[in-house]
Image (cartoon, rainbow, N blue to C red; front, side):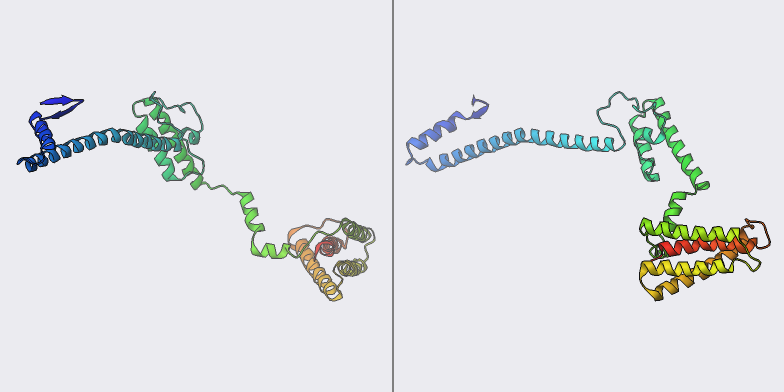
Length: 284
């Protein structure tokens, strides 16, 4: 047997192959040629196997690197990295339980439990770390239970729901902000009317002032909308609504603000002036 660079061969076969090459017309040519073919096939199979062994190494390294990146991504989801070999929880001193577990305050119960189980399994060999993780988990669970038992009224959320409701939007869409000159003019007119009502009350009540307020509201609405029919309808409707609302407030809700025999009528007139000013200025 001879070996050259890790390959072995039989000398008899080698000599027979050379003889076959030099004397192709010999009687053993057929047998020797078949032996040479088998030898070449064995050599090719051996070379292909060695190439496969050399090629599998980078593939396995690539798989290991890929698995390593996957683990890092899993660890990073809870705020940890896989290369932390100290065995001590790095956020053990953080007071906020959510930050200690590496989750957000909007996390669900499944996410909280998953973060707790993951960190417990990772730092199971260090008791202070386990105690810190369990303490943060218990605080979050107890706070969630307390919030469910004693729900807080979110005023901003309630106001947002009311303002975004269909009925409120339908009402607010009927109003618009006019020019500053219109706001100033209507404000002065109704303020003068209110002062006259307070200073000169009559025995019959502020009948004249109330009539003037109706005329002023129709005039200001017509000046903005340029439509007599709409001005009359809006003015009369606003007048009736303001008087009904003012009377209801003074009788059922608010006490009389002024003293005198006609304090109820005067106060109701002032409330109606405010509502008429709003409709005369902002109604569209």
